Structures are given as C-alpha cells and as structure tokens.
Image 1: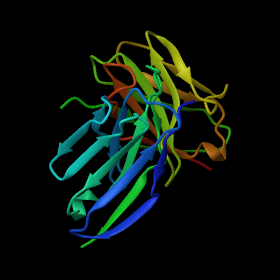
Image 2: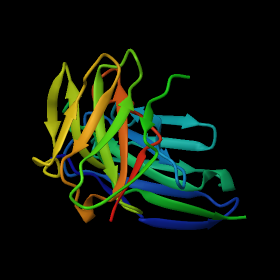
Image 3: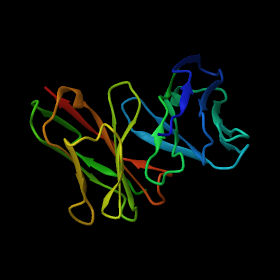
Amino acid sequence: GQQVMQIPQYQHVQEGEDFTTYCNSSTTLSNIQWYKQRPGGHPVFLIQLVKSGEVKKQKRLTFQFGEAKKNSSLHITATQTTDVGTYFCAASGGSNYKLTFGKGTLLTVNP
Amino acid sequence: EPEVTQTPSHQVTQMGQEVILRCVPISNHLYFYWYRQILGQKVEFLVSFYNNEISEKSEIFDDQFSVERPDGSNFTLKIRSTKLEDSAMYFCASSSSGANVLTFGAGSRLTVL
C-alpha cells in the first residue's frame, strides 16, 4: 500500500523560529494532503496539493509539492505557541477509498 | 460548520466484550472511514465505506471488526471481542469526494481492561 515517510519525528523550537517538516514517497503521488492534530484533538485538514511544483500559502504556513510529485514540505515562519501539535502528511496513492497518513511531526514551541 | 459527531467520547470495557462505536458523518458526504490512533502514534487506516459496502480495509480490520450504516445517518464500528491491544482512539471521518479532504470526528477513546 501507499507509504509516506515523514521527518523529523519531533521538533522543538523557540517561539519566533521557523519550522519545516518533510514528507517523502518512493512512488509518484496523485496528490498530497496535510493535516494538523492539536494535543488531545483530532486531525484537521489544512491543504491539498495536486500539481507538480505547486506552492500554496496560508498565512505563515507554506506548503510545497515536489516537481516529481514524490515529496512535499510544510514550512511555518515565525512559529507561535498556537502552532503546537502534530503535522501529518497523507496520500491516497490513487485509491479513492484509502488515505494513508505519515507518522507525523510533533512540533512543540517554547514561549 | 458541518461536523462529524462520534459517541461515546470514552468507553471502558472488559477484554472479550463487544463494543459499538457510533458516528454521524456530514450529511451530504458519501465516503466514510474509520481510523485508529494508539496513544502517541500514527493515524492508522482501518476501513472505508462507500455505496453501502466496504470499499477498502487494512490488515488490522480482521474478522473481529465490522462496520454498518444501519440508517441514512449513522455509521458504526463494531469490535466483537475486544483485546487489550484494541485500546486506542478511534476516529470516524467522512468526505464528499473520495480520499480527499477528510473531515474527522473528535474521536472515541476505547480502553480495554
């Protein structure tokens, strides 16, 4: 089945520092999605990337899909304590019925 | 904003007992999913349901598990004989367009003693 590898597993930053998490696949992805899970919460959809080389921004968050559609990244500029949580990438591998999540990156922010 | 609702929020059960977790997906969604998350670990796919039948399931979803859509609104996950290792958070999710933009419920925490 579709597998996506995500690094790092954990990242601790000082408030105001930047943060990046990376997602990689050995196969070409039809699309990639990003979700955020706050501590004790549930995954919440952030964005979907479909096109090769696509870059999308949401305020301080920048999402990128690689040219080969095998990797993606999420970059947060100037982290805030509200950014704390686990960020997951997820891919369907072409299936309309199964979305596979990466292991996630747990971000903690020191105020 | 439409949401996926799950009940119960927490269930404690004895090993070997049957458990039913309930979900009400978003009303105009057609694709339904169950995921589980063992504490601190990844979100694992269990099963997807479309057009009144299972469309895909993982190796975790063995004969102890079943899903049902008994009426037009509820979507249930049954575990027939719970094991200690079934202790996890179970998330229901739904979508309008296949495995895209899933909306998750708040989860049901299952504790098996």
